[in-house]
Image (cartoon, rainbow, N blue to C red; front, side):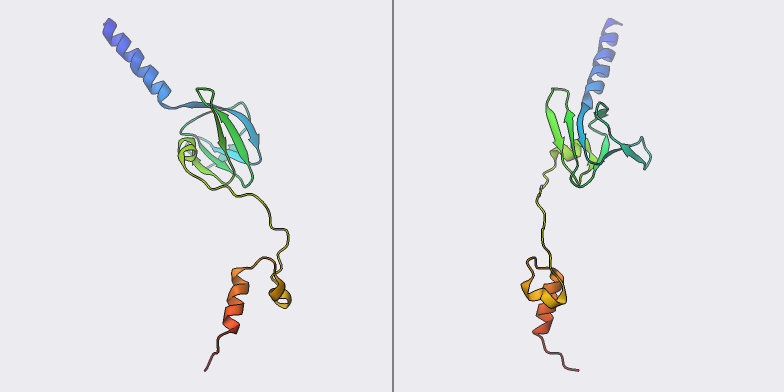
Length: 132
């Protein structure tokens, strides 16, 4: 009986630690967490506790900082959707910066500072001759 109780306690301890617990340290921008097994999201706030299987969604430019069970910080950037365990192990490309001037009007297409697919297609079509 004593071995059975110890075995049950060990199984419960292992099952409880199977899903890492995170505390939300900081939230910047729009960060949402899935509510239960519904399709509804609610805003994530600092101080909440999440597991590896918590499903979160971050908006463009948002950032959330989680503190893990070993006091390690996990940074999740903007434009993410998924479970925490998948997001923290995936490789993402982060791009920052902004386009200051875009000029795609037909009259000034030759002087556009940022080329667009539309402008390039129009230039390519002008080089072709069409016969009907």
